[in-house]
Length: 572
Image (cartoon, rainbow, N blue to C red; front, side):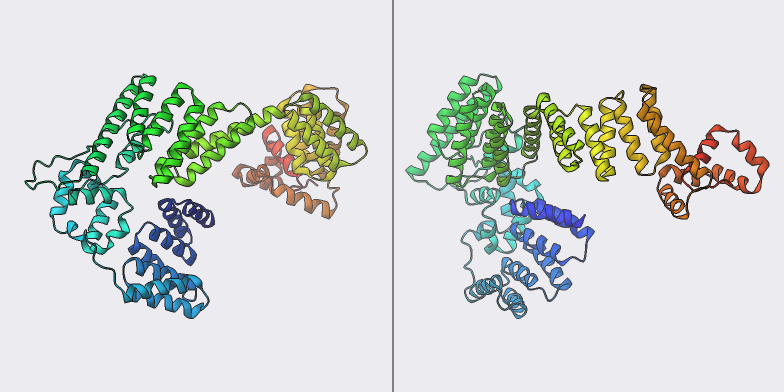
């Protein structure tokens, strides 16, 4: 179980889903708390999330559990370096190199730590913006950042920046921090915050995103200070973005009214005005998808992915475009091969962002592809030909070749009980009793009146020395075909073996083998643990009068017969 959770954590880490990686590694640690590798992996995941305190705690545990493992010191050094603890980082990397002097990762880390210690980072010019309680007041007053304060991870980041302003550089990749910095400095930064809200509001990936408009310029009525003057180019850019957002809002409204032509018109206008926001393109792709214009949808999705990577847009937006493309390709799929690009596109989307809805769509596409492959392969005529080839090899006692052709016959026509019956006979000849039993049961499932299925199943059970079960199978078959000689012969053979046990004619080896097999039978186990039957068995030995009364009960008599047949009880 721990290995399975570890594998899931490694997969999530490789795909960039570090939060899921932490969860999976934590699950693995709960199952194997002394495994140093799990703490090392979780430390790396924490570090990737810039949670250096947690990374340091896991790295220390790694070194504690495995002090002679060089990689543990690499994790320890990286965590110290992330916390700007250069001296401790140098010490950790140096200890690691004492264990493994040729380790390149440790050498590189030591060099970085040494440079950091020699030249401490200059104070961040924006650090003053985060000082004092005024920061929290400004973030609370502004509607674009007020909601962030309800998110614990955001609050933790801001507290860390207040404690150590130089750590701001570590968090600038977070759009929420950039948005907050803009509010604190009274400067408008271009972020993907609107698109993030749009992504969260989506009901499903192929549904239109309709989000609240983002203010282009904030009114700060409560602040008497005059806003900083901006140049003409910056003012023009803001106006352009404002116009584009208005077009997007009108497109969203038209989409909600199912006025798709108007929606496309507005989204196209937004794209023309501002080509730095790929949400305009993905929204237009959604309209094309809704209209059944799948080729146009795919073109827009490809354009959004290409432009998004040029702009280094949020990976979630790129994943959304890929998922929407996969949905369009799936709508166009007619044969199994058409699903190959669908599956490939969904897989690419998951490498960008591990979204549960995308994963669900991937599973559905893989299932649809498999079903179509089975339908396309279905051909009863070829199935009959393959079964006849199998019959010929069976007559020549070439059983492996016969199995191969019977298997192909089953693939061509999975509903033909004859192919399962014949393959069961081959497996019996090859001594593969479990496989033969499975095929015989499938044969009976497909056609309960097919007597061959019962004879195959009974034969397998007979060879497995399950004579009572074989007897029941033969008798069940005789209900459908009372005069079937093969079933009648099977009953006769079972009776002979059961009577042989009843008479005590078994050799010591046969008796021992039969008893061992009987003790593995759940029905035998239930009989032997039944308090009533235990009293009956005691009476058979010590109280003949009571035993005679027990023998008059058909249910008890059947259970005793079962014990006799299995060799557990012997009558003398």
